[in-house]
Image 1 (tube, rainbow, N blue to C red):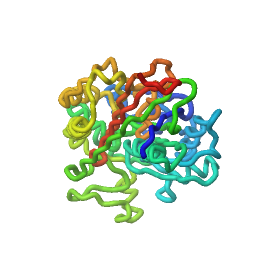
Image 2 (image 1 turned 90 degrees about the horizontal axis):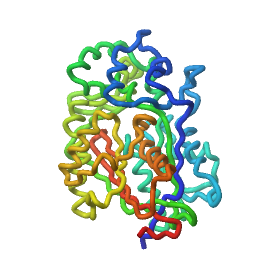
Image 3 (image 1 turned 30 degrees about the vertical axis):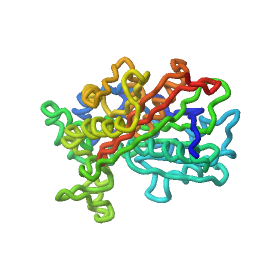
Image 4 (image 1 turned 45 degrees about the vertical axis):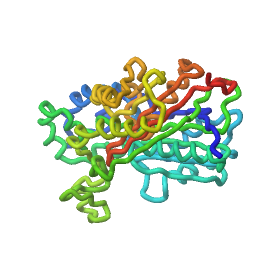
Length: 388
């Protein structure tokens, strides 16, 4: 028997003080010892004004691991009624784990030091935060767990440090003026990605006092049967095939910047809205009661303000033209934190005092890895559990 599940606490952790657009390059370092000619143009197009890095401003080195950032977000959930000793299930998702093995989830548990419990790691790119949340939701809904924590985190800055890049960066700058989407190539992702973590605590009953978010459904679709890889790291594309890092020797990995994040921007721009919005919503709306009048807040994860207008067009094409005054995003102030983004958005809205019992939230998380998408529907529930 499936029981209702409620998000009763949400936590976000953003390391160090915010980093402004003017401070970014000093924090990440100069590639080839030269200031970037691309930075200002990329930032103008993505609209991000500040973000956070684990990079210590004094030493220039990372001050926290991804596991530590995740653990900090989980600790933010602690309080009356919830302690780590009572946790039944911990699910952690990230696109930037500290190591290939062990899994990220058990490293987070190690940092937390909580007693033995079920621990799961979800992998991928932006969507792995939502897959972590879905696993945690289903664990509580099925009765397998009394409670669960799901967290999403990213530490992208370690991959963005200047020492990881070579002179090919400068060779691509000239194309920016005529082809702005080239800003998503691997070199320019330095100005797109940032660090942070978020976590949610799930139970089978709502908070006794205050508000909760009831999870109504989480639907996900992958279009890997139709689409090739678009965003990847630790691999190289050769003759249409993705070759993993283990196929190359150490010298080749360094020479080819194999561990850098890469993205096929032409493939991205031509397909991200079509598949992650229009094709996904077509499938969801065939099985769910979903219409514009029944959505009070739309929380979209997107990597850049460049995609805001295309997203609006995609929603309209899917017969779900949600007015932009109902959108809630903190991309410009919190940055693009990948798998953590939806948690960080939810935490800000949940803590804002704006939500009222009975309101409905629709969350959207796409990823371009091989074109996957998730939509989540939440209902705000009052302290008596009544959502009417």
